[in-house]
Length: 117
Image (cartoon, rainbow, N blue to C red; front, side):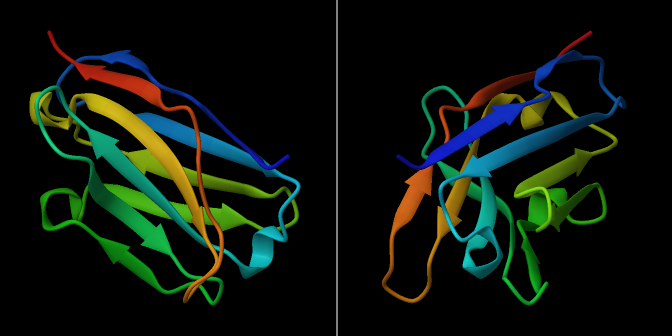
């Protein structure tokens, strides 16, 4: 079965950095639109960043200039480099794989990111 396994979350001080990784298995990774979403307590899950198979990226306005999404198709892995972290970035971060336009849609189990002094 398809697996998306996130890692790299943790506790960081405001202004700090973290890099999230998501390793995918049992999918044709290079053909999937890969994304990172987050969900804070009491809020809806929201898109943070995504990257198409061709490398086109899309970012939430709140993270533009601070976060960078990248992918390594040879390693079946997508990354999210998060810099200048703010307390409002605190959330569970989820990896997503979508075969557009109407194909399968998979989620990871989530990794907690907490930004606090």
